[in-house]
Length: 209
Length: 240
Image 1 (cartoon, rainbow over the protein chains, first blue to last red):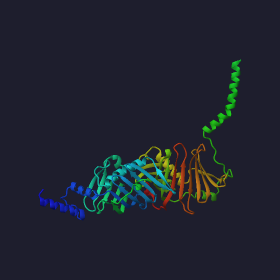
Image 2: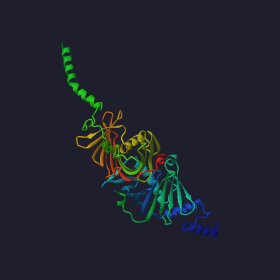
Image 3: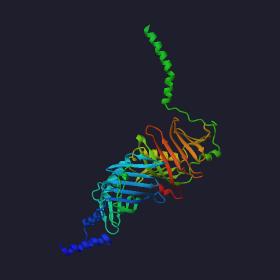
Image 4: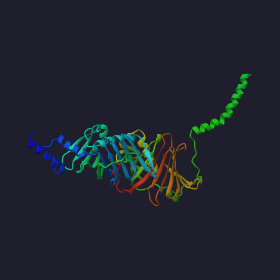
């Protein structure tokens, strides 16, 4: 490629990063490269979230509130503050959940926890910009703004329960605006993040109980 | 001679063991008696009948509960339950969500027929839908059978008793107007399920329910009511 064309292409990519919609001339690989760079510098995340569950039989969405902490490569603290107080911890691949019952914290066990461990494994990849190597989902980058990554199940065993996952990237580097898990028409969970801070120091005690 | 002595001794041993054998046989067959009520043949009066229906809303409703489960082998887990009930037709739609919002189980029960819309393992195991619907019915629907007796137990609490032969019997016990217990007995009068509930005065649905299933694979549920509402349009809610 001639030098002039490279400069022109770089300008187009810079414009994409700021506000402009992606150029038709951009290749898929270049667009993915930009997405990866969006997350490349992330070593930790601290954020609040609202989770809204839409279900056909519900009159209005079921809303949960919580906080989320992530420390690369795979330490996770997913904490609900309402309506149930619970903490899901993942440190070094070890997954634990604690739920508050009355005034006591109870450690939960059972087959559901193993499934959650696999979900967290996927999410750790997403949070560091690795969408393509998920064993359960293949990723497609949607054109336009805001930038959205669509995750589609690779296997029938997953697609029978989850139709797709939609990740919406924030203009702020390293941050997701939302995650939407679509199970079927009229049945979805939307997690919206707010007050996100990246690369803040997170102590080990956050991921222990 | 020696043989005759042995025979007498053997006969004596059989006779001595006979009461023990009878006791063992009775206990093995699971024959129990329902708790006695006073008066013993108290046919339910109109006033008592109304009181007996207090825990069971008459109109269609929808509710969301937090559910803490203590299962066999020490398993502990928490989920969110969404329930739609039409008492007149005894129709139920029950949905179980993980805390993260994933739908783990979704089924409807209408005219005695259960339709599973969605079930994530291990909630897809055989017998689970039937067991779940049975438990939900026990918590929220008027017991099956006939209200045959009202009276007081030996603690002085008002008891309403339904019998649905040959399946069993159900006792509804009031400690206070807004606190009750439901005991479900099988046809051998063995206690199989029990629940304790407490509601706010005048509120139709219990605020807290503690439910226990007895047996080798027993479990208990602690339900906390998050929200509830009466429904005017509900037919479509029982379809997928």
